Length: 59
Image (cartoon, rainbow, N blue to C red; front, side):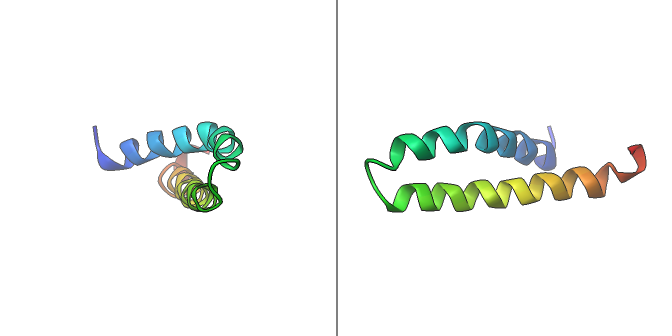
């Protein structure tokens, strides 16, 4: 399994679980959802960049 595929899987995980975890953690701590949200945005940008750059010839 190459690194790009692993990061893509992690980014899918973040995009699916991220909003739910932010809603749960928001009541506990104010800094955690901000950090998790920033990580989710970074993984989302990477995911779209990976899909459109490396699979551009398939579309």
